[in-house]
Image (tube, rainbow, N blue to C red; front, side, top):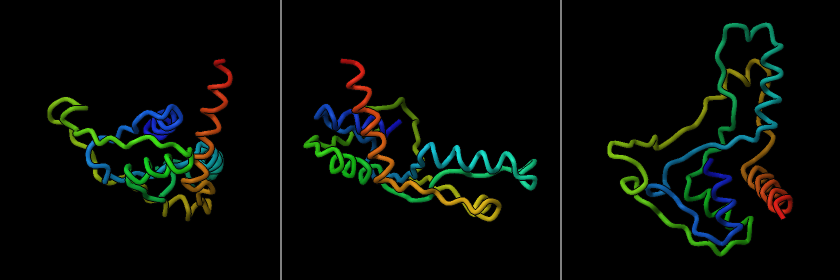
Length: 136
């Protein structure tokens, strides 16, 4: 939910809220890439009983994501770092890095995500713009 949240915040010129120091990394996949891969996996006979990671292995920090969202939206929003202690209950731990291993699905169906992070953000911006128009 971080990406649509950042886009909505940027479009409203609100501060982009980054929890922790923003150095934690994540990978973002577009739903069209995931659905396309699922369709191929579901119908592949060698996939029966197997487990696959599906997603994107293009890694970015959350702070880098916030900066890219600002750039793409043209927003002048600030980026506010919020310590985990203020955002979550005591004992919260965040994984510093989440990157799926796509080797197995690449081998099975030749999967490679087509949408890079910039295109994914642009699609979320278009969606949020359409939602805003529909609410008027």
